[in-house]
Image (cartoon, rainbow, N blue to C red; front, side):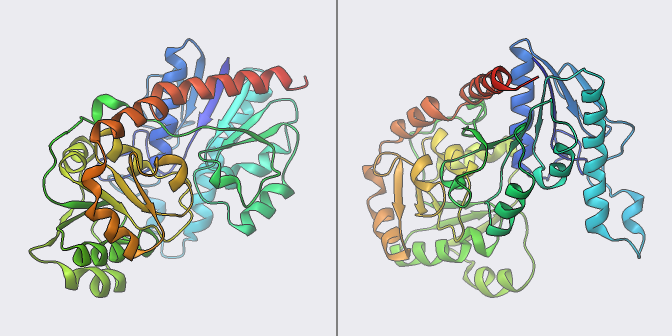
Length: 359
């Protein structure tokens, strides 16, 4: 297959150190995995992108953000939202130029909101969108408005589909990990872990309350935070039993996962997948998450962690976390959430779409 794919023009791929952008990591793994299987994959990204694919096309586009921001962002009169959209749409336009020349069989795009209008212009090439965010009602309405027979959707969990069950779904394909980067640890230390963005929707404050009630230690890792949520909900609790270790680079993340007795995810939103869930379980660490979004799909309740409804249930789960066998957590990820499994499912889905796509 001849496949074109892109994620964003905002950052190079892979992103610079200090930038966590899960959709890009997944897109990179899929692109390189399909290339390894013999497919011709062309990746569209800004200058400086480096992947093991057939070809990288940048069109001379410099990344909008990264180690230093593009000079256009320094203009005090800038409309940053419009610039961000156009930066991505420039790359998308390059994809369609290649498609019109007959050089592409299938297009896989990740920033769906910026690509949908283009999809109505070309009817004879399948366009596959991988959705990484929750489908809010307004997004579901827009997706339906732009729907056409050649445009397909891939969800990263079945739960993600619920607000828009009647879209042209091609498959649910779970995100996958390269297990060699997530080492198993069968002998954890005596602390719970919260790792991720320090935002209200991620439930940092709830994780703090749960560990305090359970009389356990908590380590918080994530990008340094500012603002009222940090100053009122997190900072006052920091001390001997609640420690903040800052941003943890990807190459060291397995150490924090592996040494934790449990990963706490009291999420306050409909989590589309939860990459931290499988990263922790790959290291042998069970996950305790609120029953939102994909939690029940990704976590095997009672076997690789616990899915709970509130802080009180989370406290009870923390107290019985030793009943979870850490080997079962690793085995679960190995069975369902590897890069190899993910790439294989993308390949099968793309073949299926091409077989049914009218020419």
